Amino acid sequence: MAGRSLSERTFLNTEVALREYGGSCGATRFDVTAGWRPNSRWLALGQVFYDAPDQGEEVIRAQVTLVRFLNSGRGIQIGVRSRIDGDAEEVMLVLGSWGRRGD
Image 1 (cartoon, rainbow, N blue to C red):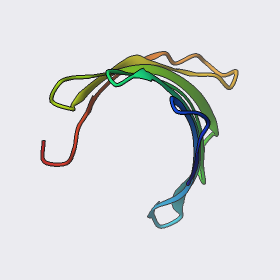
Image 2 (spheres, helix red, strand yellow):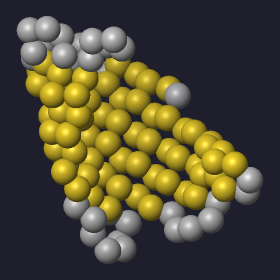
Image 3 (cartoon, one colour):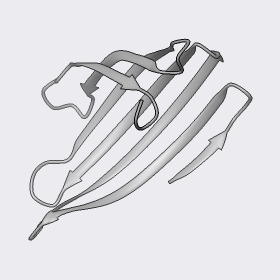
């Protein structure tokens, strides 16, 4: 994992992971995230995900989301994710809840 603050309101983050599911089943994943926080209530994210399972096809997806932070500090995330590697398009709705563990 590596990240860099580009300014007071923007950042870039990369992550690489090797996953083992047991036996000979595993995968490599590479993520790149760019974020922009115009104020304390909003966060815009653009992400690209590359998945390469040991068995199966490689997949590249892009995701664009907005997070709205509430007075409690929790956030609600909404956006879209789609496959961008030239194969059949798979558009998905992204919904998320942000908060600290135990909230």
